Amino acid sequence: MPDNSCDLTSCFLCKHCLSDWKELIAIKKRTLHLKKGTLIFKEGNPVEGIYFITAGSIKVHKQWGEQRELIVRFAKAGDVLGHRGFGATQVFPVSATTLEDSKVCYIPYSFLQATLQTNPAFTYRLLQEYAIELQTAEKRMRDLALMEVKSRIAQALLEIASLFGTDAEQYISIPISRQDIASYAGTTYETVFKLFTNLVAEDIITSTGKRIKINNTIALQKLVNEPNIE
Image (cartoon, rainbow, N blue to C red; front, side, top):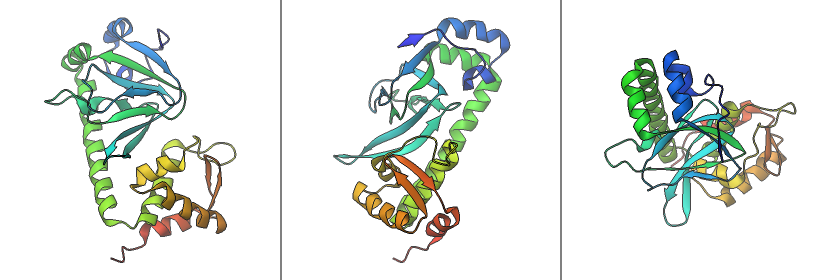
């Protein structure tokens, strides 16, 4: 549901636009409070605007075959959503779904165009985000093709822990399902389940439902670095 609660300083847009432009942002933007599991936009749908995350965590994903999905990336407060759709076709090439209750700032496409033309610092920073995301996506595609599956799962755990941090008990700060880990690592739930059983037995991780704690980062990194035997 939308509301007007926005401090006009926290999100990616407000941080990088001109101070005078914030008055227009206050008029044009919508702050959306989204429950866990909310589909923000869907792959194939027309692009109507762009989203700036101010709180929560979100997975960006796309269909991978008939019944599977591939998680392209995870996003948190400060990140941008929906920018992948601003191309020639003007449709979203990915979907975005909240992993927990989240808050995003939404602006329509027409206002984004005006913002890009008026705010060079914002335009430059958004271009940097595109470049960084492209480099990361290229590396992930390489890893999916060349790394052993257990290495990909170990790397997924380390990346998720690095992105979201840990809580007071050293668990990854967001609950994350084995299915989402499988979708991020490009494998199956069953494979993740089997490896988790081994990692727990070796005290490399602790897993309680969707809560995960990494007990031995070095051991996980060794798994990541294992060569592909094929």
